[in-house]
Image 1: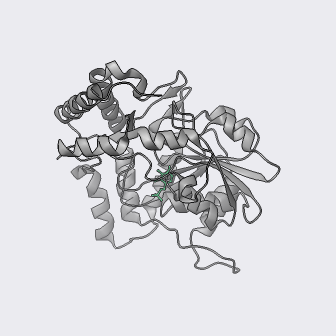
Image 2 (image 1 turned 180 degrees about the vertical axis):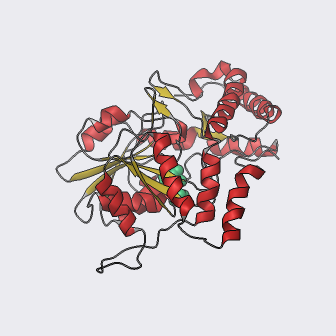
Image 3 (image 1 turned 135 degrees about the horizontal axis):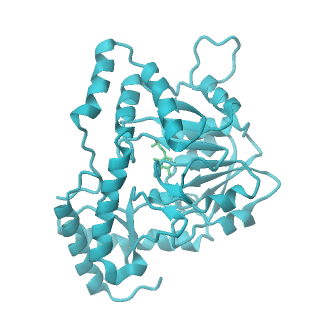
Length: 352
Ligand SMILES: *Cc1c(COP(=O)(O)O)cnc(C)c1O
């Protein structure tokens, strides 16, 4: 069985986490502090605060902007439900927009059309390792939260995703680019926003009462995240090699493969292709011992029974994610690619 996701940890990655366990200082200690510095330095942003998950990072990023009831937050429909939950935690109102079918990212023109005098933020997830059209979206003048949960290390016009918006959030969830179990971070060039995140992530020993959270990250997870972050260049290089195998074997189907726009550098957190019927394809691959998945389990507008998101609907019907992770061997990648090619050869044309 070739699994869709897998995590392989080296001894060097694990050993700093074991040292933390031996020390007994389990929560938010020196490794959290140094992870904040190394994550911010890597992306190229001045300040960072580490928290318990990507979702809590999104929540506190919104609170740092002062968002609450009456505020509209624009998000794409084609994303997991984490950003939607975070908007609701803040008491704000989500406004969904459709995606660019070529990149699967939020469509800048659709964002522009959705702006109102109540729009207070735009959450821009850089999907599957490919940066969105971030410069256009930032130019609208509304605070942008870049959601880099898929895209730590991806670049747009030579700069890391995460430096363009008002705030950037990361996730260290197990199977993300830099997985450490659970964890997240908020980064920003604005020290006041990060100060608010630091204040709100912990409730104890505060001079005055306000609603705060327990969103601290444990220090052993931070130690793991830090040692894995050091290997990010290798992770991305390996993902690009695997994408290279898929691109080569599936070159007859170029229009169905991940597009890499001129200004973007794909980090291949996921390798997404278009097929006629994603459910059927997933079944056929499973029969061949290969696990594939829908890249987004269910679009947000479908959870809420809304209509008017045709590109998201089409992506949901037609897109599948092939196995992609640094420990996937070349041999396994060729098996995945060959079996995919056989199914696509038998499928005929596509209407996209
Ligand atoms: C995983 C993910 C999140 C949430 O991160 P968690 O650490 O799982 O809370 C948010 N946005 C996107 C795009 C994600 O993929």
